[in-house]
Image 1 (cartoon, rainbow, N blue to C red):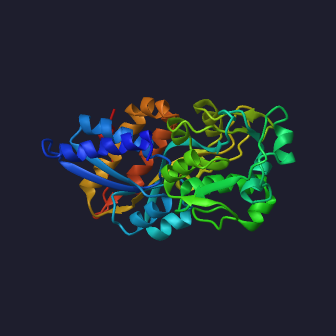
Image 2 (image 1 turned 90 degrees about the vertical axis):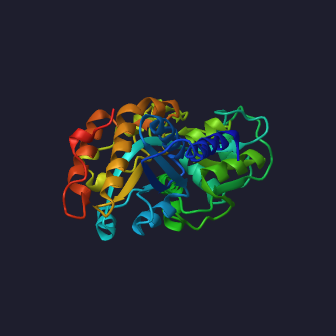
Image 3 (image 1 turned 90 degrees about the horizontal axis):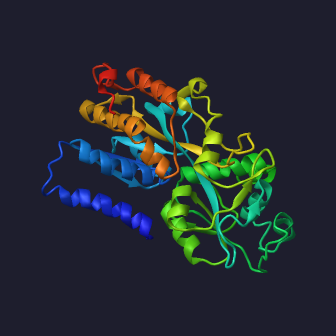
Length: 354
């Protein structure tokens, strides 16, 4: 699609073509969320030059990633919707977070620059509920008295596939709008009251670029790399905040990973004057009992490297890395949650990658 996604896919193509001259000892497969695709692609590219490991990650959406890891067709799945402990236990899965990022509403309104349009959670929900259908609706104008808004119909763009990005976005709307919570709710797939669907963050971003007078939601890296005008959102404390790594970090500080069974945490509508209201972590899912122990070790070594050496790369794409204390919690959890067929631990501290 756009320059950003093409560049990432080109990186994987180069890795694949390079196989003619570069021999990889290990090929790892993962599938799922499009939200973290930019950072996983970047990590995979750099890591392949430092190890004898090639990672093939399919950005097919969280729903697809969950299904593939449940069916044991990949080494790991990825989802922006965390699974509760009973869901993990039912399917024999372990779960851990990798980075925190932000979901951002983006608009295509001629003459309206990035950050100019201000919205509250309630108004955003009413747009996606099709209660507000014009850009010059009084509810929008009251938040933007100095902005020249057109008398044009709003086109809503949403995800068409099972998506953790959708879950995070809909979870936020459920917290700020009782009507949304009662009528629509939050899940990876929902019955949209209106709009057109795009597959993946990539597909939604493409529609948002092409369809005038549209509004959509994407992970922040896609908005930045595709130059999509973002909305300034009113947060829980009543402050209007722009999306940034700092405002995502403000939300991330409220996560209580040490108290969350299975690292289950949702970071929408958190308090704080500087907090971006639509933030969320993205998660890796692995089988608790590993038939391919060597591959499992390499997956954990890859993410260990991402935590310890890939944090600068994460920040460069506006993701918030996990704090060192949380990384320790995660790696300690691997010792007991992920085991080989003989019951022995797959991970030990000597395998930490830096």
